[in-house]
Length: 373
Image 1 (tube, rainbow, N blue to C red):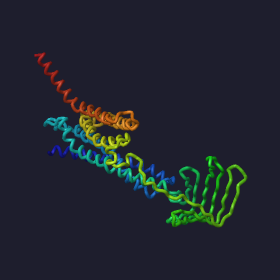
Image 2: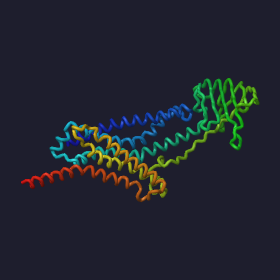
Image 3: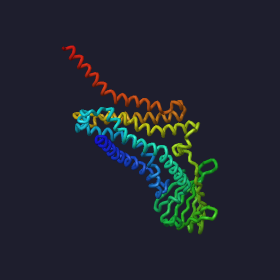
């Protein structure tokens, strides 16, 4: 029991450290991406941390199996390097018994991954999709930042304001440039609006207007001297009415209960993918235990690179099989299970190869001794 607690603690501590590092790396990359979108006016800066919170379960369900795999390799590799495993082996600790002891932390991780993949991650993806739908309904004035030119996503309008109040109602030093497109989508020139000030006005029916005061409107085509300039005291521009879609179409955002019993191939694929992640935990544990065995003279990192390549091959083939299953190239009955079966046999081969090799070497030595005698 003491050895069991010691091994479990070593694996779980290393797992936590590795997973934390991987999570920081992945979250930082995603945060930079969303930060760039916020700087371009495509996202509300105030919702960045909310977005990251919704994406966190989806990141963790992929990080934890890799963290467990690396945790076993590093924790047990250190024990082999410091000859602690040699002592345990002398007291009867075989590879099979070590694997059985490792199943406890692996089961804990598998339960957490199952909770994430079957429940929490789809909920987070659903809220993330709804949040993006709300972001799509925002106008450029909802994400406008003073002192910065901001383009619409289709590139037809550029807006600038020198000052903007905190309630986003009053603007100062307004500049708006908009392309005029005909019914045939051909360029009909541009319209430029400049104004000393402006304000957003909301009506009871939900429509919104931008009221510009004391400015000019210029209409014409670049490179031609036929611009028309009009001075105005007050100029009203109707803003697009926000339409927030409540529809979520992404399969990864659908609850698991909605996937059960569905005849749609994409729904079946998504369900098999969610079930594959907890199963992945046990198979990578089966592979990690024998791969963690190292010679103290060779160093603990000798098998680390081949082990990581083996894990990446497993995950890559699984993702490729998921895409092929969605396209109907793989029968639904075969699904993703053949990938798990292949690496299950690889794990069993790694686990039993070393004892089998030692047993065969022992028999050969005994046969030589008999032959010499």
